[in-house]
Length: 333
Image 1: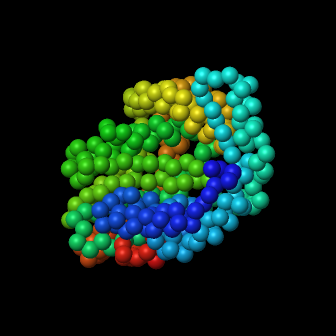
Image 2: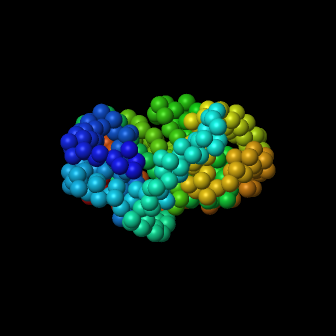
Image 3: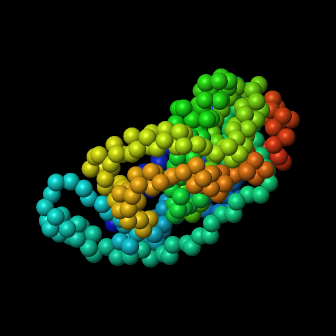
């Protein structure tokens, strides 16, 4: 299937049309599934990271069967394959079988693009996606963060666990438990080969939109100003180390991790040294990571999906507003 796929035109047409239909359905009943497409497009702009991997209604409609066939010819090849095999087998027999299957597959014909990191956004800006009659506002707040090679991995994981990475985080405690503004609030740091996004993600009823956003911003200010203490670090470290080993228990999980390490040029210390790195974390080192990664409140990008007529004037205080109807077949005006 990798080397000589059929790539049936009939199946291509069905898959393309099905994907368009799923996007259209999500606009009506599953807005969270589309938030990353809107947010990445607004944050990254023309950078490739701004392109939704599954496409948009407009980009999919313009995609032809010949485009897909040409893409496979140009960009699939032995030099682009990372194959990890984990299980109980004879090693030499497995090597022979893999060599027989893939040994004559040549390299890809097309060159991979060389990408530059997207710059962090200075100042504030707001994307308001109008969904008339929506009872809730979904929102992401953030900016461009750091790449996979960021050296303070342990500090960043501890910071994000405490800020918005678990049920007892700052965001969940304040927005859900104490104020009842939402059912879920969390923060995500997406580290890719180039810097991804750092975002606060939540939703709330339309009438309480700015109340929830203001509280999220207040917590970001608190994270920068107060940092974390030793007790908080110990709690986060225990949480992380309690969850980490089970992620490597199965053969499929080990294969996925080995492929990840190979693809990204990482050695086994990424796994073996993780516990030691977590033990070495201090309040000062976490504070340094927070300062390096999490955006300052004056440099925030806001992406909101909700009833524009109900919240347009209120959210204008966060920055210049760009408006887009959710019925538009693309994710950016």
